[in-house]
Picture 1 (spheres, helix red, strand yellow):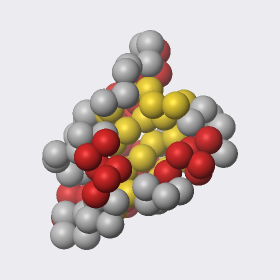
Picture 2 (cartoon, one colour; picture 1 turned 60 degrees about the vertical axis):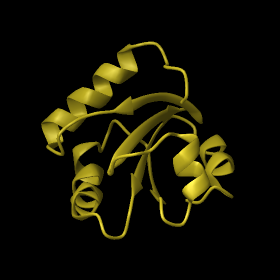
Picture 3 (tube, rainbow, N blue to C red; picture 1 turned 90 degrees about the horizontal axis):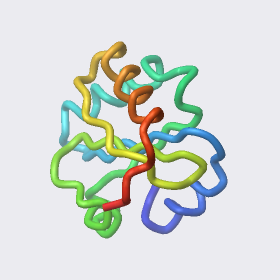
Picture 4 (cartoon, helix red, strand yellow; picture 1 turned 135 degrees about the vertical axis):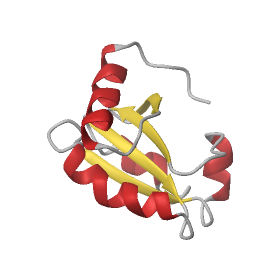
Length: 107
């Protein structure tokens, strides 16, 4: 996604969405891309990726300073930033825990 279609696509994606902010030169980001779909199947309905080199304004808006960054959205609205090792069980636990808590204020 880019800053031009970010909000419309999230608005058209009911349920739980996870956005991966990544970069083309980030090895950990590539690992996240392979781990996330299987790790969060059944919990996250939509998985999106934002290239911070192409969408600088969006990365700034969400105060993305470290990659990869994972942002959780519910019904198109920001819910929480996910901090977790890229291990399926840990990712699943982090998302499930975030969903039990009230939505955070967007950065």
